[in-house]
Length: 446
Image (cartoon, rainbow, N blue to C red; front, side, top):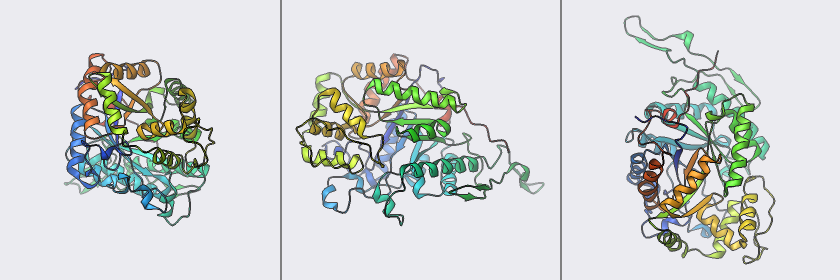
């Protein structure tokens, strides 16, 4: 096993419904289009990532077909068909040994006891490699699938989510590490003094406990928070082990990184206990020209109007129809569903002199994440600069086309990162926390 050091960056791969991150990645000649409900495809994704010793495979989720009432408008979206992530991760747990298994579960449409039980069970199934992406949910269609007309306001969603997470973590600590005796001679299966009843009574939840799943192999599953709003930073600094974030340029990434680390300190936690991992979309080849050709080959299929409409949906319904697609990127105000989004796209447009259509095309490729097109050295240089200059502890990879883009990164970039001493040669241990260099949390004092 390889030792995790401060010079080792963390790497995760972010996969959506059929794997491809790019909205139209499924249309590429080399893309797999049937992964949405084909387990063998996901097994191959996991094998590619695990062979490269990536920290985790992270499955995004939405609990709705998102696109409004007119399904004809989103007939080009592969996200209409997808596995439920906990079912898929449980299946992958039996076929993998090293890679972390992370899934999204929204607090707005779940109950904390159920979430605590599912992820504790997954952590046992995979030997301590589970991670929960704790989000509030961000689409109106999701609310409408759970007897609601619309989402609760942003502030209320995060208030509920904070209490939700506290309950989940409390339930994960129901059992002491040595609570199970399993002594056939005495007839005692457990030590009652080492199992604790939560008895939580709060504004949003009343949960007695204890959880009926013992303390998991890594103490608690890794908790991921995604986003960049003030509420996300506050909550993430308090409860998260990993922060996934969208940062399109290094200066913004450095600012966000400092904000997170300072907020973590203010919570009384060591800054190294929280890993900041911006999203990164990579088109890589032996030469820059070949990498650009890969990018151009995919994007020749894009329609300008469709790209602008997709940007509008990405921003939670901001109306862009009144703006000239060939005119400058307009200034946009934040909205309740995507408070951290509009400013990033405005900045991309202003700093690069992009029109609205050009920003929309960039959003198709990488949403509001960083996009790198280049040679192996170009990509490694970018990652090393961000890592060494205090902009990132690692990266959440966003493969546009799978398996091709993922294979390109794992076979071309990972060896270069290792040659530079930036990434380990093997997993450091058996749990996700060990592999990411995260400490095993102590059980709360009851």
